Length: 131
Image (cartoon, rainbow, N blue to C red; front, side):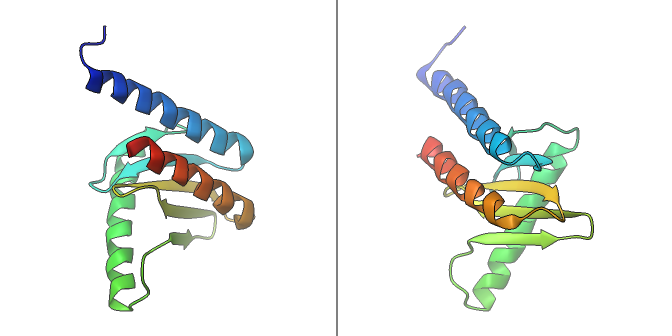
């Protein structure tokens, strides 16, 4: 039972976020995990739920903070993307609004072009949900 307009908006937002993540994953079947992360480390939404999504969200938030500090010290301007390449997997993080980011985990051998293009489109939709 819905008790307030805020609760309605919250349910609508969660549904919209799930649709955005589902579309992202359907366009990029190599995606192993996709999370919308708040700037305070909360897991806002997960496209492919895993047991450790909450801890991944917290670490992703810390990674963003460190990358922004690093970028600032080097006077690189606004941070657009974080790319963390490992031997087996690659993590890509992009801004998705003023207080959220989109984090995606893919196999290391996945082509980044289409994934990052799809992520940018999804991030724009995510940002619009929170405006």
